[in-house]
Length: 226
Ligand code: MN
Image (cartoon, rainbow, N blue to C red; front, side, top):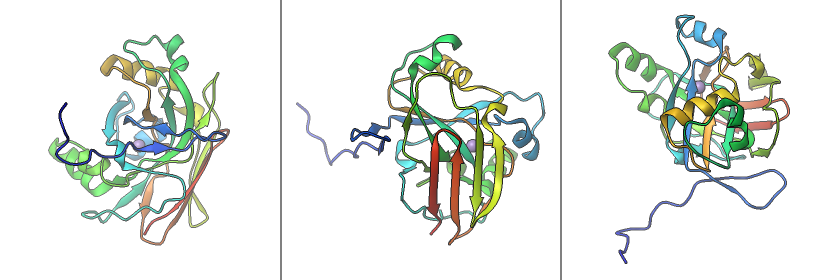
């Protein structure tokens, strides 16, 4: 049997409400431009369909953790998002079977180096440095939920001032459609997390900011930018 050259990284986990077992994260997929008003505020065309990008699993910052302001940016943005946690996988999942894969939901923030993202867009370069950096995926505990996906209010405040306030039901791709679309591109597996896109009202954060987010029926998240 082969020996590792060095210790492999620990499995990234997210706590689960109401139970001691934790959710092992396999990877993080993210949906871009999934709310029409946010697509407009980013200068997108109303006909552009949503799309996917990814973050590494170790971008997760669990509940109670501070978020370190990342290097090489002067315009770090918050994006509040509903997060889908998968307990099962597969590929080419039909929309009407997609919610069977869902273990539950969490509240997440897709932290974004907006200046690097805009530069990448201008040059046709990839988004990894803009989206997939260290501590770029704060998340709440996961709430196990079967049945219909959450549809309610999604909000984010900075230092007590509301910045994002929208409705999950306004997503262009609903949760079942997101899972089905993702399964056409990747073989999904248990442990996959999907950040489902942010509504309008994104904006900058600075060191010392207190960020609080909520998705109705799912939970809350709070962290400090340090
Ligand atoms: Mn996002």
